[in-house]
Image 1 (tube, rainbow, N blue to C red):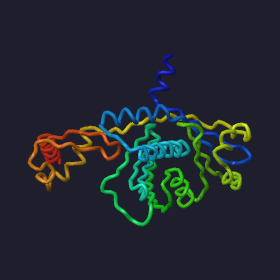
Image 2: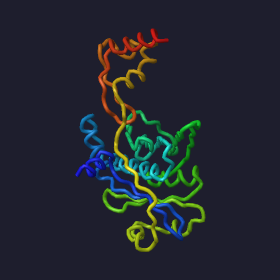
Image 3: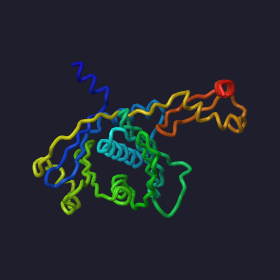
Image 4: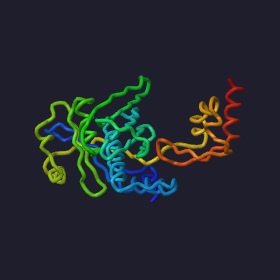
Length: 268
């Protein structure tokens, strides 16, 4: 029983396989538990999304998790994806070292342009941060991710629903059978383990977690407090701020920010 409890604490299991002969990597996971954690978090934060936005965020979390599971252990990714129809900015991030993913969606003050944009930031230990920007069409996060792979990663990737909360990512590897990969559909994926020899590569675990706290919010607001304290508080003694990564709401007092700045000055 203790082993089950430990696995549950680690989050959902993502398995990766190598498709022999076809030369492709397959990542698969059931996201039911992760989505439950997302909804509990949103309930605590007072967040309610329209169904179309909820679907978009669910796709984004599935996509970034499966992507992370196929990447090196020391890699952290953050995607900010601008959709024009529906008008929204979607943020998701995955940290392989911590085994965490997080996401948020913004529907207010979203810039209207004539194109959708996919911003991808990658941080690998001991290497400078890398950013790529890709244009895409449509309102599906999965299709946006596939376009990102095609343009930025220079390889084919496909992502499919396997069940209501289970998804499969298939990414081309060297000498991949590209025609086979491009020809796959949702029905073919459901019989993949029968039609293709799959060799288990790895099992990883991911959970929905942000890591935001009062101290991080104070650090984020301190620069504004130094130069525009009245604009920040507008005559009040407290303000409510939302974490941009997960939407959690934090109450910040003027006194706590002043103390933070005073401490920084004395230590500097």
